[in-house]
Amino acid sequence: MPVLKFRVYWEEDESVYRDIVVKPTQNFLQFHQAILVAYEFDSKHKATFFRSNDNWQRGREIILEEDGQQRKVAPLLMPETAIGAMVRDPNQKFIYLYDYAKNWTFLVELIAVAKEESTKLSYPACVRKEGLAPSQYGTKGLIGDKLVEMEEKYDLNREGMPVDGYSEEGEETGEREEDGAEENGAEEENLF
Image (cartoon, rainbow, N blue to C red; front, side, top):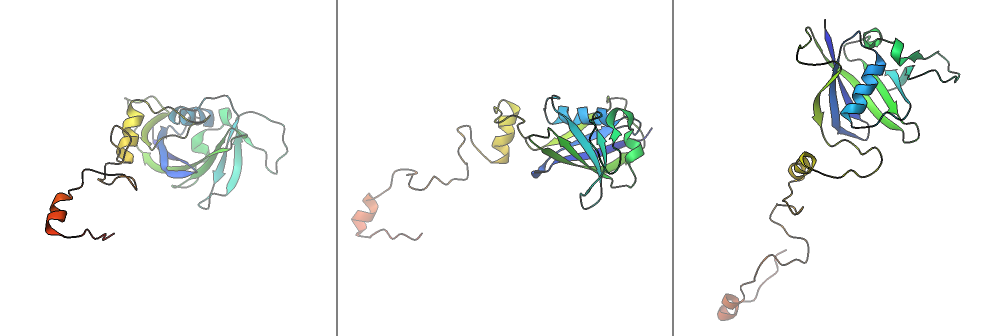
Protein backbone atom coordinates (compact mmCIF):
# COMPACT_ATOMS: atom_id res chain seq x y z
CA MET A 1 0.00 0.00 0.00
CA PRO A 2 1.37 3.48 -0.82
CA VAL A 3 2.26 5.95 1.91
CA LEU A 4 1.70 9.71 1.82
CA LYS A 5 4.34 12.01 3.32
CA PHE A 6 3.15 15.42 4.47
CA ARG A 7 5.21 18.34 5.70
CA VAL A 8 3.38 20.24 8.43
CA TYR A 9 4.76 23.79 8.75
CA TRP A 10 4.00 26.13 11.61
CA GLU A 11 2.54 29.16 9.82
CA GLU A 12 4.54 31.66 11.94
CA ASP A 13 7.94 30.15 11.04
CA GLU A 14 8.44 27.89 8.01
CA SER A 15 11.75 26.63 9.42
CA VAL A 16 9.67 24.80 12.05
CA TYR A 17 8.05 21.73 10.53
CA ARG A 18 7.27 18.06 11.06
CA ASP A 19 7.16 15.38 8.36
CA ILE A 20 4.35 12.92 8.97
CA VAL A 21 3.67 9.76 6.97
CA VAL A 22 0.16 8.32 6.72
CA LYS A 23 -1.62 5.64 4.77
CA PRO A 24 -4.23 6.94 2.31
CA THR A 25 -6.88 4.82 4.03
CA GLN A 26 -6.29 6.48 7.41
CA ASN A 27 -8.64 9.26 8.38
CA PHE A 28 -8.16 12.91 9.26
CA LEU A 29 -8.79 12.23 12.95
CA GLN A 30 -5.67 10.04 13.01
CA PHE A 31 -3.74 12.71 11.10
CA HIS A 32 -4.94 15.39 13.55
CA GLN A 33 -3.74 13.30 16.50
CA ALA A 34 -0.35 12.69 14.83
CA ILE A 35 0.16 16.43 14.30
CA LEU A 36 -0.62 17.15 17.96
CA VAL A 37 1.86 14.50 19.13
CA ALA A 38 4.53 15.75 16.71
CA TYR A 39 4.19 19.33 18.02
CA GLU A 40 3.73 18.23 21.66
CA PHE A 41 0.26 19.81 21.95
CA ASP A 42 -2.54 18.40 24.07
CA SER A 43 -5.87 17.35 22.56
CA LYS A 44 -8.18 19.56 24.65
CA HIS A 45 -9.29 21.91 21.86
CA LYS A 46 -11.25 21.82 18.65
CA ALA A 47 -9.56 21.56 15.29
CA THR A 48 -10.35 21.64 11.61
CA PHE A 49 -8.67 20.98 8.28
CA PHE A 50 -9.34 22.89 5.07
CA ARG A 51 -8.43 21.51 1.69
CA SER A 52 -6.31 24.21 0.06
CA ASN A 53 -4.81 25.29 -3.24
CA ASP A 54 -1.32 26.59 -4.10
CA ASN A 55 -2.27 30.06 -2.78
CA TRP A 56 -3.26 28.64 0.63
CA GLN A 57 -6.91 29.59 0.20
CA ARG A 58 -9.34 27.67 2.37
CA GLY A 59 -11.55 25.18 0.56
CA ARG A 60 -13.71 22.28 1.76
CA GLU A 61 -13.64 21.97 5.54
CA ILE A 62 -13.07 18.75 7.46
CA ILE A 63 -14.19 19.23 11.06
CA LEU A 64 -13.47 17.24 14.21
CA GLU A 65 -17.10 16.82 15.21
CA GLU A 66 -20.53 18.09 14.18
CA ASP A 67 -20.92 21.69 15.41
CA GLY A 68 -24.24 22.82 13.93
CA GLN A 69 -22.77 25.89 12.21
CA GLN A 70 -24.14 26.87 8.83
CA ARG A 71 -21.65 26.81 5.95
CA LYS A 72 -21.95 27.23 2.19
CA VAL A 73 -20.83 23.62 1.73
CA ALA A 74 -21.48 20.97 4.35
CA PRO A 75 -18.22 20.02 6.09
CA LEU A 76 -16.83 16.52 6.18
CA LEU A 77 -16.06 14.80 9.49
CA MET A 78 -12.50 13.82 10.40
CA PRO A 79 -13.34 10.30 11.67
CA GLU A 80 -15.27 9.51 8.47
CA THR A 81 -12.97 11.03 5.86
CA ALA A 82 -10.01 9.09 4.45
CA ILE A 83 -6.97 11.22 3.69
CA GLY A 84 -6.54 9.61 0.27
CA ALA A 85 -10.05 10.69 -0.72
CA MET A 86 -9.09 14.36 -0.33
CA VAL A 87 -5.77 14.23 -2.20
CA ARG A 88 -6.50 15.54 -5.68
CA ASP A 89 -3.06 16.51 -6.96
CA PRO A 90 0.61 15.56 -6.37
CA ASN A 91 1.25 18.68 -4.25
CA GLN A 92 -2.03 18.65 -2.34
CA LYS A 93 -2.21 21.24 0.43
CA PHE A 94 -4.31 21.53 3.57
CA ILE A 95 -4.59 24.15 6.28
CA TYR A 96 -4.83 22.75 9.79
CA LEU A 97 -6.30 24.99 12.48
CA TYR A 98 -6.12 24.02 16.15
CA ASP A 99 -7.54 25.75 19.25
CA TYR A 100 -9.77 28.47 17.83
CA ALA A 101 -8.99 30.83 20.75
CA LYS A 102 -5.21 30.69 20.12
CA ASN A 103 -5.63 30.14 16.37
CA TRP A 104 -2.70 27.77 15.90
CA THR A 105 -2.36 27.49 12.13
CA PHE A 106 -0.28 24.91 10.28
CA LEU A 107 0.30 24.61 6.54
CA VAL A 108 0.22 21.00 5.39
CA GLU A 109 1.72 19.96 2.06
CA LEU A 110 2.05 16.57 0.40
CA ILE A 111 5.78 16.24 -0.37
CA ALA A 112 6.18 12.58 -1.36
CA VAL A 113 4.40 9.32 -2.09
CA ALA A 114 6.18 6.08 -1.27
CA LYS A 115 5.18 2.90 -3.07
CA GLU A 116 5.64 0.64 -0.06
CA GLU A 117 4.97 1.11 3.62
CA SER A 118 7.68 0.42 6.18
CA THR A 119 7.22 -2.53 8.52
CA LYS A 120 9.24 -0.60 11.13
CA LEU A 121 6.69 2.22 11.48
CA SER A 122 3.27 2.42 13.06
CA TYR A 123 1.22 4.79 10.92
CA PRO A 124 0.65 7.68 11.12
CA ALA A 125 4.21 8.50 12.18
CA CYS A 126 6.38 11.59 12.52
CA VAL A 127 9.59 10.84 10.60
CA ARG A 128 11.33 14.22 10.81
CA LYS A 129 11.33 17.20 13.19
CA GLU A 130 12.92 20.53 12.31
CA GLY A 131 13.03 23.53 14.62
CA LEU A 132 11.68 23.99 18.12
CA ALA A 133 7.94 23.49 18.36
CA PRO A 134 6.01 26.52 19.58
CA SER A 135 4.90 26.31 23.18
CA GLN A 136 1.15 25.73 23.34
CA TYR A 137 0.61 27.56 26.65
CA GLY A 138 3.56 29.90 26.98
CA THR A 139 7.25 29.38 27.62
CA LYS A 140 8.64 25.87 27.56
CA GLY A 141 11.60 24.95 29.69
CA LEU A 142 14.70 24.21 27.68
CA ILE A 143 15.87 20.87 28.97
CA GLY A 144 18.28 18.28 27.65
CA ASP A 145 18.22 17.83 23.89
CA LYS A 146 16.25 21.03 23.29
CA LEU A 147 18.90 23.12 25.05
CA VAL A 148 21.60 21.46 22.96
CA GLU A 149 19.55 22.18 19.82
CA MET A 150 19.27 25.86 20.83
CA GLU A 151 23.00 26.03 21.57
CA GLU A 152 23.79 24.62 18.14
CA LYS A 153 21.26 26.76 16.28
CA TYR A 154 22.41 30.02 17.84
CA ASP A 155 26.03 28.98 18.34
CA LEU A 156 25.98 29.47 22.13
CA ASN A 157 28.38 28.21 24.75
CA ARG A 158 27.18 26.61 28.02
CA GLU A 159 26.68 30.02 29.69
CA GLY A 160 24.36 31.11 26.88
CA MET A 161 26.84 33.60 25.44
CA PRO A 162 27.71 33.85 21.74
CA VAL A 163 30.95 32.12 20.85
CA ASP A 164 31.87 34.35 17.94
CA GLY A 165 34.78 36.00 19.79
CA TYR A 166 33.05 39.33 20.35
CA SER A 167 31.94 40.69 23.68
CA GLU A 168 28.99 42.87 24.49
CA GLU A 169 29.45 46.59 23.88
CA GLY A 170 31.38 48.23 26.71
CA GLU A 171 32.76 44.92 28.05
CA GLU A 172 36.47 44.48 28.45
CA THR A 173 37.71 41.30 26.83
CA GLY A 174 41.06 41.17 28.59
CA GLU A 175 43.91 43.19 30.04
CA ARG A 176 45.11 46.01 27.82
CA GLU A 177 48.83 46.25 27.28
CA GLU A 178 49.55 49.90 27.89
CA ASP A 179 53.18 49.48 28.95
CA GLY A 180 54.53 49.07 25.43
CA ALA A 181 52.52 52.04 24.12
CA GLU A 182 53.81 54.33 26.88
CA GLU A 183 57.46 53.30 26.34
CA ASN A 184 57.30 54.13 22.65
CA GLY A 185 55.37 57.33 23.23
CA ALA A 186 52.70 56.09 20.82
CA GLU A 187 49.10 56.98 21.36
CA GLU A 188 46.32 54.49 20.74
CA GLU A 189 44.13 55.37 17.85
CA ASN A 190 40.54 54.14 17.78
CA LEU A 191 40.05 52.57 14.36
CA PHE A 192 36.47 51.49 14.89
